[in-house]
Each structure stands twice: as C-alpha cells, then as structure tokens.
Image 1 (cartoon, rainbow, N blue to C red):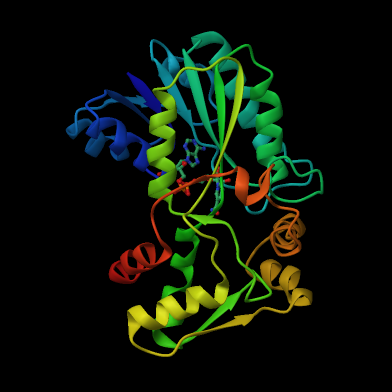
Image 2: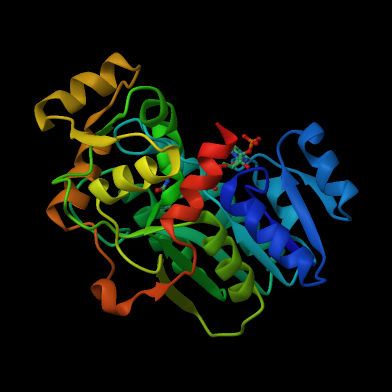
Length: 287
Ligand SMILES: NC(=O)c1ccc[n+]([C@@H]2O[C@H](COP(=O)([O-])OP(=O)(O)OC[C@H]3O[C@@H](n4cnc5c(N)ncnc54)[C@H](OP(=O)(O)O)[C@@H]3O)[C@@H](O)[C@H]2O)c1
C-alpha cells in the first residue's frame, strides 16, 4: 500500500494512476471526502487529511510501504514562510510517528539556491524532512509544461502570449507532470539508504519562442511571445491580489539569470519522455 497526497492534483494523480496501473494498492489522501469518491471507485483506500493536520497525516501514513508527499503550492507566501513551516511541522510529526518505509517528496529545480525566492519554501522542506532518520527521496522537477495552460486562451484568441521567462530565445528546463508522476511512482518502489535527490526535466530544454511556434502549429494561426517588462512584474502580481509579490518575481529572475538550475545542470538531470507538443495538444483540446 502506498499513500499518495495531492492525489486530486496534477502530479499526485499521475503517481496514483501509475501505481494502480502497475497493480499496486493506493491510499488516496484527500482533504475533501467528496474528492475521494472517484479514487475509491478505482479501488483505493481513502484517508482524510489536511497537510497541516499531524494526527490525520499520521493515520494516513501508517502501515504503508511508501508515501508520496506533495507540498501545496503557495505563490504568495507571508514573509518568513510561516505557511510552509506549519506544513513541515505536521509532516515531520506524522513521518516520525507513522514510520513509513520510505518517502518520495516532490521538490523543485533550484531548491538548493540560497538567493531569496519563492522556491526557498521547498528548500526548507528538503532541509527539515531530509534530517529525519528515514529513507527519503526529493524529486526535484523542472518548470511544469502544464504551466502553459494559463496561456491557451491568449494563444488561441489573440495570438500573443505574455512571458515572464525571458529572453524569449533562452532554453528553459521544463517537464510534463505525467513524466514526474511516473518517475515518483518508480522511485517509491526502489530501495536506497538515507536522503536521496533525483532531478528531472523533459527530453530537451524549450524556449518561450518555441512554445509560441508550437501553439501556432497546433492552432493553425500565428502566435508570438511578448516579454513582460521586468519592472512591471511586482505591480502586476499585486494588482492580481498578491500581498508579497517579490518572492515570485525573484524566482522568475532565477530562471532567467540561470541560478535556478539543477545541481549539475542539464547533464546531471534525468530526462522524461513527453514532448511539449504533446502537452500543448492536450491543453488546447481541453480548452
Ligand atoms: N508549477 C511548477 O512549475 C512546479 C515546478 C516544480 C515543482 N512544483 C511543485 O509542485 C507542487 C504542485 O504540484 P501540482 O501542480 O501537482 O499540484 P496541484 O495540481 O495544484 O494540486 C495540489 C494538490 O494539493 C492538494 N492540497 C492543497 N492544499 C491542501 C491542504 N491544505 N491539505 C491537503 N491537500 C491540499 C490539492 O487538493 P484539493 O483538490 O483538495 O485542492 C491537490 O490535490 C508544489 O509543491 C510546487 O512547488 C511546481
């Protein structure tokens, strides 16, 4: 039995589907019972737990071979990151009490960066959980290809996509969430000792201009990228409701300046199989 958190989301769903397709049993960890029904129908056990609820997480992680941990995204964290620190405390309590045989935790490219930015949240997770006397693997994923979902309407209706990734001809490490889910499920079935880091990107790095060209091919219309000027970002994020827009802007700086990178760059990362065109086709079909 494998416990999967974040199962109603992109990566957790992929982890669970891969395990189920391999004939392994899954405990779906959900915070809303209604969202567990579909997984129960697929043969999963269902456990109810919020990621900040240590007793509920302990119950969810008890008597399993492995746990997949997904830290919910927070693009607008309070300074000092109290939100993720609360999640870390709950997770550490639960892992220490339930003692699952192993843990695979989704992390990110650049989790090791010391420059202040949004991804420091996953750096804190790695430092804290990595100190536990447990078999724990941090799967550091590249920029999700599915982040492009937000650009489908602009590409289709206007033919102009606004990019924070720039310059527009700079290749960016990206990966499909299905590739991440597949690798996380594989790692859950492996054995290692102590703390382990695995880094993953797609088959090749992709520029924003290549994304526009791929949209153009799929939509059969001209599509171009337009860089959002750097001095607009914080004001723009604030106008969209962010109270603390700087960490997100700094993360984007890190991708653009190259200090959000894998430990050993492109040559040290594992490569997924799914190409950007396949992901964009799915996103366009979904509308
Ligand atoms: N986007 C990127 O480019 C990128 C790159 C590298 C790493 N990451 C990391 O990937 C993770 C996000 O993965 P994803 O896109 O698969 O997530 P997602 O699709 O946004 O799904 C989030 C999942 O977390 C659950 N969740 C949210 N808050 C919760 C809470 N308080 N308690 C319990 N469950 C909660 C959601 O459940 P509900 O259905 O109930 O909401 C959902 O299952 C983040 O840790 C992010 O830092 C992202």
